[in-house]
Image 1 (tube, rainbow over the protein chains, first blue to last red):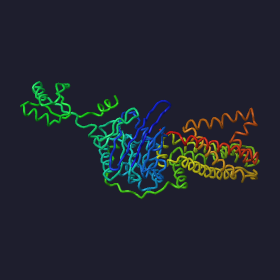
Image 2 (tube, one colour; image 1 turned 60 degrees about the vertical axis):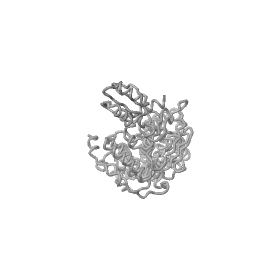
Image 3 (cartoon, rainbow over the protein chains, first blue to last red; image 1 turned 180 degrees about the vertical axis):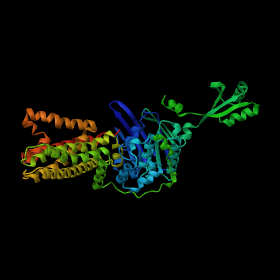
Image 4 (cartoon, each protein chain N blue to C red; image 1 turned 30 degrees about the vertical axis):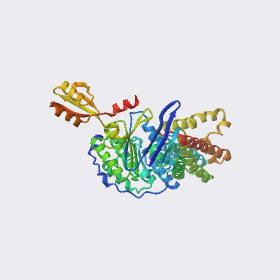
Length: 289
Length: 259
């Protein structure tokens, strides 16, 4: 289990991370979401001891990261995939990591195979694309098959196939009882991967909860052949109706089925009926307004 | 091109993950030193510097011996100069082992795997001292062979001491480079400052204030030591460089944020 409490980072008078607290439970994938510059990377760096915290603490299985005897055996971390020596080959990079972590050297080849980099293993990393470096970083995080995975923007540079593969990897990890924290500035990248969203804006946690609670159906948008008649019928049925763009009627808080029932009862012809979901941008502006 | 080949790389099914055997505790000091040696020698720049430090002295000796008509009185002088030259090359190898990690940002991985930064710096110090001493030992052996083969009638008195100083200088300069590299955390800055001070500032100081220069200059200390002169002062000068560099490196390493 990972407990982050009151984590704060100040540079002079500027507060980059402000009193961030959360607990990560085994068996879950948590998305750490926020725009660029919101404090995600700084938070992850403070959690792993790379950046000293101004205040607050992180406990991983009850201990700070730098008190873990062999931290990579507990937490697999991918922070910045480009922080590798361009002159080493992918295999050499992973073998050096394997020796430091204390896993067999052959494990380097196993994780290379896992991320599909075996054909490029003997090439210098300087010639790798961003996506390949991202995969190499994931391979390094998986060397000890640790119970906790912390990935910062892992989808950067991955192609759609790679993103789907990573989703399976992280879901599978959580299903085996692992704990996953992955950050992103794009909801679309992580929406179907995470159980829970931790939304950070200007250094503060602004929302923390299950994806469905935060981004659940907000209402229904409906197009009707006779909008005025349908509006009257819906208002009679107790719904509040707003007029959206392009002639749509928006019914906040209503399921499409409920609107359909009203329409069917009154014999209204519908040309379109769909749920309106709130995007992360809307959520974000609302939370940080 | 690379992107196209990347998308052709097949990802393995995720379920193939099998938990490997993992060492329970932290890596032993000896293991960390071995890893740092491998790190230094696993890059082209590190390997090139190690090879250059082994070959520069014998090559320069052969050129000078071949070009010079004057007869050489003693081999001690050339051995001292070549030891200093080799040390100056190994200075860069030391810088790369620490500052290179900041410049390439590989410190991130290094400290994620071993968060106790003091242990990493200690391992790097021992690792570059070993590489420096071994490279200098190869260089001095080759240099002595060149001298033996090309120079007739020179005295070999005191050559044993000069050889010892040559090897020690290799370790001392490599460690100094590692300390300064850790303190400045930037390869170009560390290399420029070191060479500017040792090859630029100190010779000027020595010209105008010889008594001050000889109390600061590590290159002069190596020359003096291999000749058996000013032994205490020379050892103190070299010790001072190592201690100041390592303390500065340790202080910066301890708290510096890894971006």
